[in-house]
Length: 298
Image 1: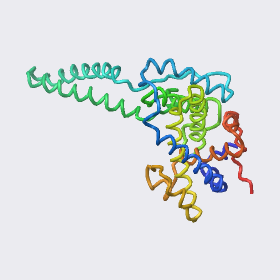
Image 2 (image 1 turned 45 degrees about the horizontal axis):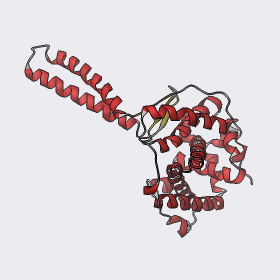
Image 3 (image 1 turned 120 degrees about the vertical axis):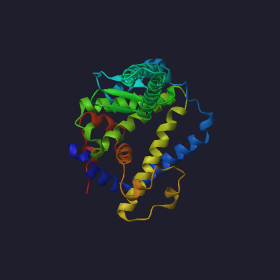
Image 4 (image 1 turned 90 degrees about the horizontal axis):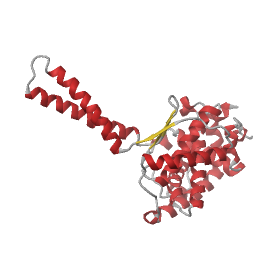
């Protein structure tokens, strides 16, 4: 059963549903373009802080669990990059570095130049810790080893989708046979999480009458579907439809559809096709290790 979620089968599933993909790509592109044209008028909420993430996350998690019909929550640690807090931590790093460097530099003799050198080393370590921390939170992610959700969203609206996506990974890890550790060969992991990101974002968009909740997800899905479409056409050695190939959707790299396809695009496309054909219940079926919807029908 779990083999149905592996890259080899998922590619075949997408290949066998090219016409469905063409329709889905066109609809996703139109949704994205519509939102993009009025992006400057959309309300993306407040700047995300640890305080409002702390109040927002439990509600998103509850909605995600409710939709997936998961009765028991899994404990997780959630954090985000917040400059004021990181500066405090970096000052501690710098102070510790200054002491160690000062002792090392003054083993022979304590001089002004040695103190200056220690200060420079401490400053570099302190600044470096900020840069590294910011880089680690550039994108949201789930660390299955420590059950740690790292949220990279910059505002409260985008944080909704990010929390839903990453917490879905947490639920996958604890309740399904999906192998989070080897997600590159298991694209359904990301396709499933992206689906929940969109479903929960849409719920918020409707509840608060705010299309901004759908913007980031629509951009990602439109890009991922286009990558998968171009890749599939290339694999099948057919010419992509001009209207779809020229859709104004920015692509990360030509590599994805000429040489290989990334697991995000492949998984998202497969789950989007499955949802279109079988309904959104496919996302609940994944939680029950039911992947029959991915079977290739001759």
